[in-house]
Length: 105
Image (tube, rainbow, N blue to C red):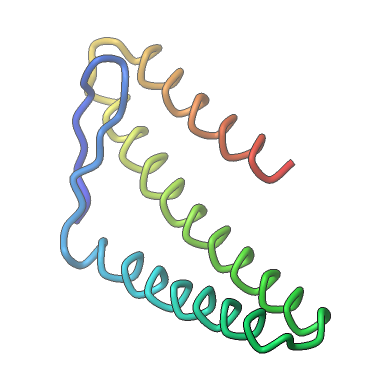
């Protein structure tokens, strides 16, 4: 179970092994995709194949980001119920969501 603390205006996650494992597995697959892309470029594969590999890695990274955001929001909402400075917790959640939206926009 992921838990969090509120330190210096930020929600800080402390992930359990169970919650960390899917992120680490996905990142391992993404590393493999990037190594595959490098091999494709070194072998002068067709550009469309290379672009498809880039799109797959980008989509996989986006999914990791969504998992992270989900954990952050869930724990932030939990903290907001108990934290004296609820407004600051909510501001941190909005800051994270804005950063995520700007990255994909």
